[in-house]
Amino acid sequence: MRRRELLKNAGLAAIAAAAPKQVLAAAPADAASLDAMLRPRLAQHNLPALAAAALTEGKIVAAGAVGTRRAGSDIPVTLDDKFHIGSDTKAMTALLAGMLVESGKLRWDTTVAEIYPELTGTMRDDVKTVRLDQLLSHTSGIPDNDALDKLLAQSFTQLDLNLDELRYWLIERALAQPLQSPPGERFAYSNMGYTLAGGMIERIAGATWEELVATRIFDPLGLNSAGFGPQSSLGRIDAPLGHRIRADGTLKPMLAGPNGDNPNILGPAGTAHLSILDFARWAGWNAGQGRRGPPLVSAETLRKLQTPVIDIPPRPDAKPGTPPPGRYGLGWGTVAVPFAPEPLVFHGGSNEMNLAYVMLRPQTDFAMVMATNISGPVADEGLRALGAELYQRFAPK
Image (cartoon, rainbow, N blue to C red; front, side, top):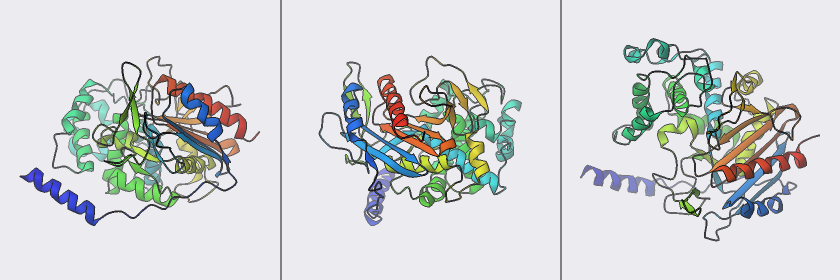
């Protein structure tokens, strides 16, 4: 009975609070179309859809979107279509942390014990010392392992909790687990670590991570297409669906719903989506390192987020969308590429159904983004090749 009433009330609320149609910003009239560059790559890399953009000095100089929203159907994508950016979201979490550090509400060396003193009785001594900057640089020692996967599965049974309360439920149990290495000692990619960082931000700011990203990043930057979770709406094919690859190599479109994205609880680690144009604007703002407004944080803080603090060792089993060998800062990595004279600031993101890359060269105020609605090694190869071509054609010499 209670579940039926909840569903009924949710349906009535959705009708009463129908959101107004979004007003999306178009690419500049003088921006070059990338469609001719992108279209051959669809068949070459077995991609349902592909979108990309390049910017210099914060201005979009080229953009394109080709392919279909759903494999096996002819539903053309547009520049306004939303793509899932996975772990590229981590830079947003790090930026929120930087805002709170600048306001004096957090420090980069704030420990989990300071934020969660009521949980110290179940924490091991080394867990108590884990710092905010270690969580953001994947050096906390907090693992992504089978024990935490079980906690994620159990979180779906917690029916009376809001999302921030649900993260606290997960954090309480995760902090009782042993670390896989001493804090600050080595790089180990951890979505759980970013979820914990998001939880710390929520507690200090007094709002959910989603509210904070929407009001403090999306709104001031004018990222009108941005949101969280599956990029398409439930019951509609109004954005490129993510795709999984079946055992026989065919593509399976993944509709919006419980399996259309990572669990919402992992938001600080990677659940954002937005159009390729808004993705480009986000990248261009970061590439500017304070050269342009809005001044969400100081130029010094932006540079700190992008400055490497730890080497990323080679990982033969690393999945597409996780950091390649290089170095990692706070929400951003750096990677050496053969087509650029120095390492680029980089991040990749994937929920294993989509793949998105952002590359910055702050020295020349250049940025490029690319996204597709499938993941895997072939898609990874395609985006990397595309990145080389975009850089060669549009990066300032």
